[in-house]
Structures are given as structure tokens and as C-alpha cells.
Length: 172
Image (cartoon, rainbow, N blue to C red; front, top):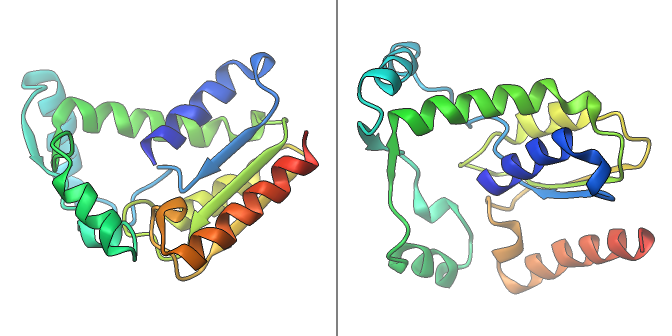
């Protein structure tokens, strides 16, 4: 999600150095917008106390239907549930910039998104895809999958990877 947002910002800024974009469930919006007062306070705190943090409120069980993937996520010592005020402010700016630059993307573009994503907004991804200017663009929506589409159960993952493989072969 965050990696997808970063990749889209890079593609918009430096299209001359890449041949295409493959993106999965990018963070182009949240599944639910935070309350206006919380967002307002977050932006102010970004300047006053940038390291102030709150829980991100994400439910780890909604990452994947594969219980082992969820367990590995929960057991990873580098994973935490904190979001700082500065991170929130910068994330919000990056999401806005990415969405404003969608029409600038003219290179081959593959977007694969989880239809049952609880970490990012599948609707925001669909809206972004519609604005992408590339004549060579493909969107796959996996209706019942959670956020980590490449880390779902074996049969589901195989379908997602087959779609990726087909797109890659077409573009080699």
C-alpha cells in the first residue's frame, strides 16, 4: 500500500526512467476517512509535535485470509500500529499529489486491487485508474481478497500471480 503510493509518486515524477508500472492495492485513500477533527489536529500536531503518535486502528486479521501470513505479520518485530502526526500529514499530502498526477501516467500500467480491502480504499484505486492516461492500462479487482493479494491462500494467490504473469509476458 505505502510502497504502491511511493511507486506512483516516482512514476509521475520520473516517467523517463521506467517502462511501466505494476501496482497492487496502493494507498490512494483510506477505507474510511478519519473524523475531520482528528485530521485537523493531526495536521496541527505535525508542526507542533511531529512525533506524537496514535494507533493506526488497522485490524491485522484483514491483511490476508491466510492465517500464517497474519501470524507472520503479528510476529514481525518491525511491524507496529503507530502513526505519527508528521507521517499522517505527509501521507495525506502524498495521496493528494498522487491522485492529482494520475492523468500524467502514459506508460503501460497494471493495477491489481483487493476488492475487500480494509487497509486502503479500493474505490480510490478504481477512481485513480480511470484517470490514468495510458492507452495500455489493465485493472484487475479481486472481489473477495484482502489487502495482501500476493499473500492470500494458495489458490487465490495463484490466480493473482497468473494475471501478473500474463501481463508481464505481454510486455516483455
